[in-house]
View 1 (cartoon, one colour):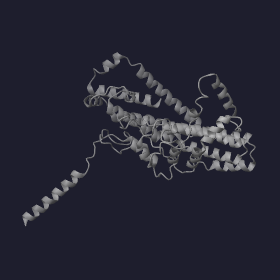
View 2 (cartoon, one colour; view 1 turned 180 degrees about the vertical axis):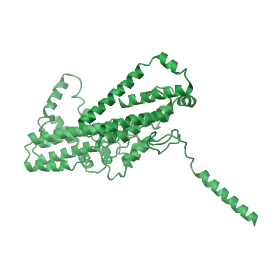
View 3 (cartoon, helix red, strand yellow; view 1 turned 30 degrees about the vertical axis):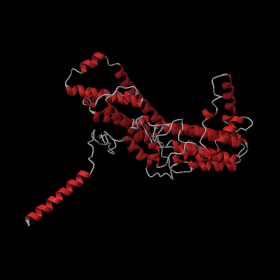
View 4 (cartoon, one colour; view 1 turned 120 degrees about the horizontal axis):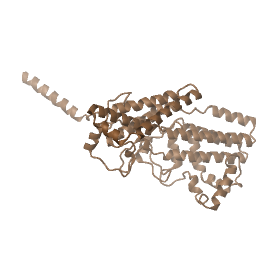
Length: 419
């Protein structure tokens, strides 16, 4: 009987060991995880670092699906090479769609179409001067036939883009890849789509003005409403660059609408209908929210890259850098209290968020001026440190040297990433 029990326990033990062996070994975190350090605690990559790209994209995506995502249609509008370079396959993977075919009726860029007119010669000034005369007022095709031709060629992409503005979500994955396919720093994520969003805004504005010039006021207002929605969508993106681009697009939309109201001979009924549509447009996300989450994660991701590469603040971005050995990197890493660098950076981001959440413009402006002045002081402290001071610091006790090295790196991170 005892031998049967022993055999049973042995079999059970072997089963447990087999199950345990099949479970992937969880990586050991390189940092102390927490709100004050890494801010997010997952996911970890195979080396134990926070995968900030995945963490941020997961938050940006939320409940978005390919059917509700405006970016899926914008990809069909812009094509696979928005600026001449192909978007990385991981971008489409994150979107949950296939890459569009190489050939198609995609948006023809302004600079691509007008490359002859924009050559630096005596005709360029005349071209730009004639364009400026009509850019901010209704116009007719006879005034700028080449521009009318450009808009005609872009009719299909414009229609796709307008359809995109009717979708409720805007999820543009932030993807950063090196030539070898490995992940890079989040601050190096591709901004190809964002640049083309601004080109699209120019198209929508000029077409709205042309429609107004032809007396098609309601269609002109429809284009302007789409332009407003497009700006609000872009400003919901994951990078500060997208927020600024969205604000710029909203500015173009405002100018377009005002010009149509002023010069387009619209009726009171048409103007009221336009106003009612604008009221449905969601407001732009608060800049404080953008800094609090998206920019914070980008900054912390940059600190991770310094930790894993062993370079100064800008060197991870250099293409011609000399690779260091793992031993050299770990030796460098041991001289820094990385959790303290993260706490220091988080503290400065908290100050920025608090300033941006002040109740009115004057208070926000004063608080931001104080932060800017403090950052300039840190910058001067780093700039004025002499070689003798650096040498004397290294002669202190190991813990004192480490504390000083940590303080210096914290200041470098804050001044270079926030100024």
